[in-house]
Image 1 (cartoon, helix red, strand yellow):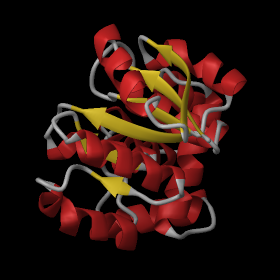
Image 2: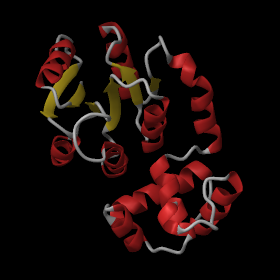
Image 3: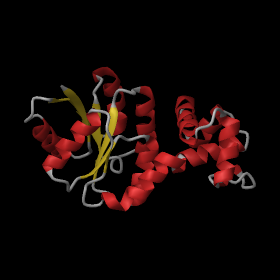
Length: 216
């Protein structure tokens, strides 16, 4: 059985998704929340296999929280179901480690197939109607270690010599979140440590150490 947690600011959307999923015995909706901040503690308690959410509505830094969820609750795969068609939104979500990204205008059958695929450790990228737009971006992200905007910001602060605590204070996040970002940065860039990440970041043009850290 695939345990699902729903996050959306609109109760009617959560109800609709729940009704669709629970028509099938393989799915069980174990909980829901209005926004990701409300969901985080419940995710740790309920241990869902999949978190279906709209990353671009509601309050707070959802992309930041997605990265934290993926790090802290590695079993809970994040699946984005959104009305956004902005490429930048897609890139930010991909950088945060989401496992699925689907349009809210997709067919029900497409949602079901996508959820099954992600739950089985696959990756779904948007709806079939617009997936071709992102093909080259996906390949680049998988092959060359594409960093999200937040990851580039943190890498820039590392390059300017800030500690994890100083970066956390600057970005208004916890030290644990900074560490999670740094782990993802080193994994994506295929480097061993902070120093190598900075050197590679400069080489790839992700950061410019000549700039003031407040502008990074």
